[in-house]
Length: 140
Image (cartoon, rainbow, N blue to C red):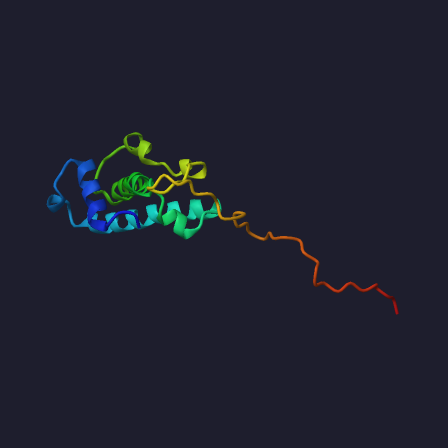
């Protein structure tokens, strides 16, 4: 993950305009789940585009995206659990999952990262008949 759980929890406290120590116990699980889900969202989206795990982990905007997407998840989960009454409109700007489809990926050294190959696809592959044996069908 790009952020520590402690740093992520502080982000949530900042959004709620409260101190971490004053957050209700239910926030512990919400923060953990949202943080993990945000990281998985980023990883899945960039792996699907063909980026390597190493390129994703070196991405300089990873922390920013993990924070925003995590806030979006946390507030949605907290609202469902009755921990806050934030509106969908208030948290919508934090939902940056769509941006992951086209975002430019570079490292902190400013080095552009390019996809390492063709993105994986389900039930697809190269059509290669190099080692196939073809025989003529005969009828008996």
